[in-house]
Image (tube, rainbow, N blue to C red; front, top):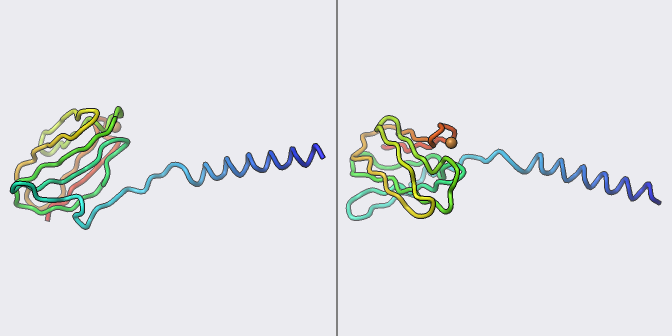
Length: 129
Ligand SMILES: [Cu+2]
């Protein structure tokens, strides 16, 4: 009797450990190639990206040739994704821990724009076309 209880507990623990191993990490990068996070506001194109534990969507597609701002939304983000860098535009900005911050990127020409967190650990990109 005691032995079978022990076996059951052990196998439950085993299943738990295995399921954690298979289910937990590895976030699939969220992509938004349909432009659903891109909209116009007073003649300015807004690319909305959430920051916190990385950037979401990690890949966005927007239109080239119009004045554009990237609007970062944070909600209690204390990790380094609240420090944004866009090296090709010499942009380096600390986002508020909670709220929204616009980064004006001017009028982008066609091509990809790469950004990342302060440490270069979390990437994001906006492809202008
Ligand atoms: Cu980082």
